[in-house]
Length: 440
Picture 1: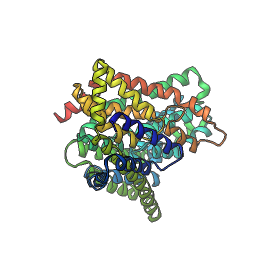
Picture 2: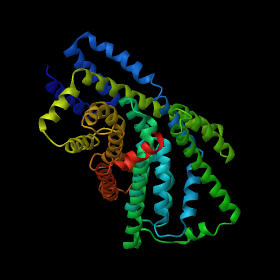
Picture 3: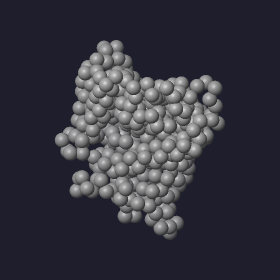
Picture 4: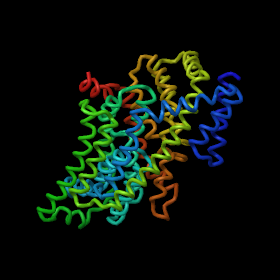
């Protein structure tokens, strides 16, 4: 069977499995093993232990459960609320200030959790109710939660970035640094949209007494709120700084983050044994799901690579005789379409080892391409009608909110992210300046 026909068979089987509601990791791994046995014979079974060894015994991937655990401890202990209150107090009485706080804080919470689904669900549980109670337009409230919670995968420490680095043998520290300026640009653009939108239509974000009460708090209470927020932010800075400066590996910094989260919970007098146990249970559930997906997607990707798909894609792109940037745009469109049917983990594991070597052969920096991939995934999983993140948002929305209203709420924020993606493609230094300045 030729690689072209094999690829068509694999993709067809995947679409059928997903349509039938099969578990993603088992479907990918099972399809690869079944098709591999029919085309390759008994030798396909050697792929499983080698994939397990290269995947589950990777020192970089050991960071994933640690970062997820850190995020669960921070959110379950209520430290996310501390960040939210501090941000709101700093911004003050500005029309749309609550939405601005949501974008900033939810992006940080999303970064703590490290994955889109958990980021949106956690952010929504904290921020949606206060916004609706203060009379914010529902589309504005839902849109900023989606924008902030999903942005967590672009703000280090990001689980998909760690997976990209592991799959392509690139530096996690460089990936984190490369994403920081695009993340900052995205946050600024999102806030600018909120400010302009609320100025043009004040009904989207009414001013009320709750904002004034927040500003008229006693000085000791303001100091306590500021302390809690600053200490929470310092933990994230500590985790990232230990990686960037080379003091700790990504895995060691994850362990440092877990210890720091426990210490903060104790300092804030929010540490409870039940909270600690529940955070561990939730982490175990998330990690087990993630590991099955990683294993299934890795088996699928490794089998496809061994059968020669990378050469097929390279030959195909060469035969098109397109400028290199058009090849990169084609890869972006493919990943955007994939985001309609699969989540961020699988897109990284399937596309990173396939597209990155081709991008490098065309003369592009792998860190630049990796950050483009993360921004693309950020857009893809939010794009109607089938983006994965849309259904997470539906899960936290009021019962009378339909999918049509959710589609309309996220559209302007998706366009902002698309603008940032195009900006990073046109000006690669937005991504590459900081890694070169710090690590070269």
